Length: 392
Length: 118
Image 1 (cartoon, one colour):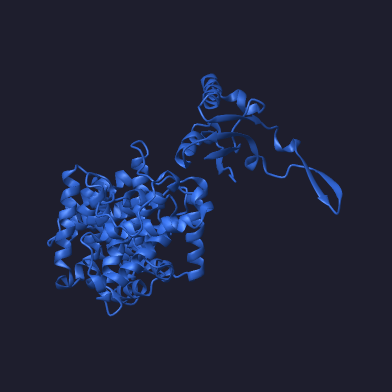
Image 2 (cartoon, rainbow over the protein chains, first blue to last red; image 1 turned 180 degrees about the vertical axis):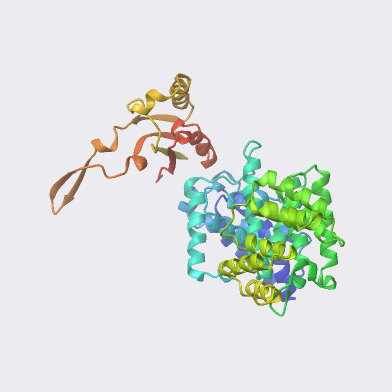
């Protein structure tokens, strides 16, 4: 029962908190009220059974508790929107549904006037319902540091007047980009090993897709995360990195790949051609064997035009090498200004090896080795070097 | 909410700089027109333009006696060249107004500071 409650609470935390912030106009007050409502639920639901509409029950209970608290503290009342609100009857919990204000909440948390690390922490705390200690652990900072970061961010929201709303049309494209970037950042933080963050990012992605069903990039991001995450189990073997071509496909999560494709189709049906839709389309093609390299190369070309990123060009070079041979791929690689990027050198090494230019390949792999930080990646490059044999 | 928008000059040329003369006539007119439009925007209380930081004098009081030193305290690039006050619904409105200040696009930057209310 406790575990079921916990899951029910995690799933509803964002909704309940958002509704309370919308009503109270204050993050801290809303957080206290939400916590109180969940504590009351934990006590009553096992005894009396869960209410018909648990979300509405939690919001109404939290709201009533907050009103009680405010009545006891008039100065606080003067700082909130509650002055305009009629008094709520004690302990009557309405069955009306409250509007879902999670979108307002996420746009507030990802406002560009907040530092990116604060945006990430706030999003995980308020929408994800993660405890401060959990967020601190996930980002490898002391809990006190994370607590301070959250306090400062909430203070700025209040003091600087960051609005609690979905931005108007002329601001929406930029702000949506910022929201998606935060979710993808959380995902990548998890993809690098801390799986619970990746799962959290996917949960956020699903919520966004539900809340903004007409935005192709929202579906694109969800698709991208699902398609990448589906291969998590196959990506490492005994702690070593396994490249896509060598992965054991029976370890891929077929259900998640199907869900990813579904999200991608929705993004494409909305005529999405933004960076997330394109990346998801590429990830989708990578999941099919034999891979359609010309198509993958063409999509990387489109993505490079959208993002103007040399890293994307490097990926295009790999696809071109598969489609048209290593010579063609190498020509693109040689034109890139990415000397400090380890994958440029490991890619160059691989293409030179295929062309039989072993000495140059060895030099390129050595340069990659100088730049690598991750142990698993280091071992992968060392294996490649060993396969090239000793210098003649 | 009330905001003070502090205009950091950066590389922005002003009519007292030699670079100002190098600007095309229509750009100079646009700067004047933009400031005029800003000052006429509802909610805006126009500020005053400050003399450059090398004209500044710094005053401190230590153990009861006044210490006066020659500025400048700040690099010209970081110095505040002017300001305006804006009464707005929220930070988004203040950011949009800040983006309309010519210095923001001419090498300077605008610092948006909420005014403390008690």
